Image (cartoon, rainbow, N blue to C red; front, side, top):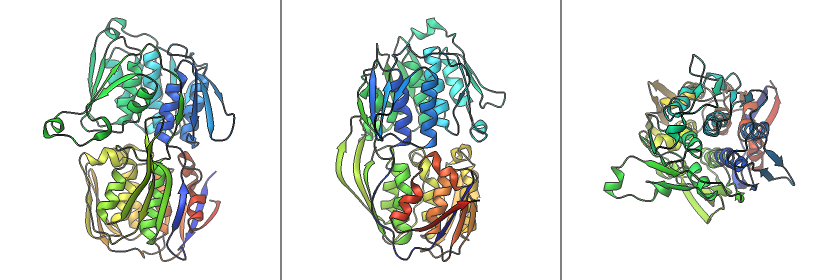
Length: 458
């Protein structure tokens, strides 16, 4: 049901300590790998948004048992590498591109026939980028004539090719494409190497290691590289396992969700701490960007979880901001936060460029167009380029009240809510129901930090 938010200017800076839901990206991958582990895997703190629910429903459709003994804990009764069953009907991935793309790789490798579908938004997003490299590895997938869902996985595979070492060279820096190939390669009887144009999120590699799979990578943990290492294209090398060992997995707090609360601190001149937040180096580009803008970022109580993911209590306090453009290798590591990068550019005095971000046009909405629409609603001087945006900030908040339709995009709905905190009057945001895709408790979190939000049916 359509939902509308009306957000009034807060009485003061947003401040406080808060937690966020389990990381959406980690949860997707943990559920799928737990499904093919040899026994029960317990997930603590898994994401509960609609996207993760799509993955949970999908593995159940494949014959995997799921228990919820207490709130916050999911037990997945793994069926082993070869225990997935052919579903009796198409698997509906909802709005979740990660579900569709990673599951396609897993099913293709396992040789399980299935058809994947999705909602209207997901059915517009490209799927040939998954099918093509998997077909090149001797698997069998077919997408629609438009290169989109429905995607059908065939059981037949070129078994001779599954016994030979393989090397996939990706043309697009995509953690989803990389992960789909890695998941399919669990069923090959030889080493598989995936080469990327840029480093992308490494959640799959960390989780595979947690389940006992041998995975090597050139840029493991993104430690500082030597000049010689920097010249090497990023690669991941996987050796096919005999089985995946079940275990207890802690899911870190989702930094991409936390980013909106941390940005709210900057917009309102406040100070917000997100406890137990994931700080995987392939996800912290937004924190680095905040520091480069002039915000104060502090990490405390650092530790590593059983899923291989580092976590910390992350505090962001507002400070004088200066413009900072982004592009190139930073874009894949900032992809979910780019609407916030554009919003924060409006607080800076001077020009900010966002380049090399054409991938945003292929998200739940055309995020370049919808982000531009949000900035224009705020009466910020901005323009689109072929692969990005130019934002000319005037320094500080205080833009006029605005109305905005999030066009079914959860991240734009949350970005608009953060922008409303810097307006001079009440702002209206339609399409706020989309927030449930990733962060059902977002509005409650804003209110807990001091925001004034009213919810109604649009």
